[in-house]
Amino acid sequence: MTHIRRLVIDVLKPHEPSTLEFAQQVSEAESVAGVNASVIELDREVQNVKFTIEGESIDYDTVEAIIEDAGGSVHSVDQIACGEYIVEDAPTPQD
Image 1 (tube, rainbow, N blue to C red):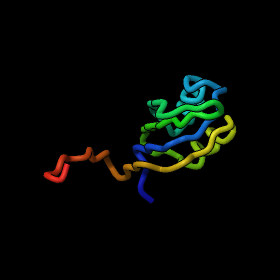
Image 2: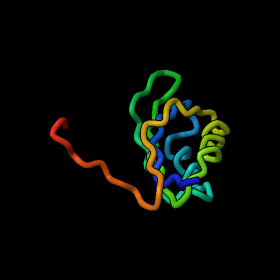
Image 3: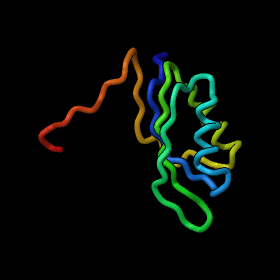
């Protein structure tokens, strides 16, 4: 099985714990080397946060469990990069 090197997920989370605490918890997973978290939308009860996660071999199940233990849920997997290295998107004429 190939290794997941980048994972971009949309997470629905409560206001507490904060986005900072949430990102720190995800970053502590053994398979995670780095995390970016951006708040996309918020309302009275929840926030939508885009997480970009990188590592040599990300364990998706562990990441999802951390998110769920903190009260969140993975709303969608928006991007995934697998293989020996990360292939960056290249612009095309349609862009």
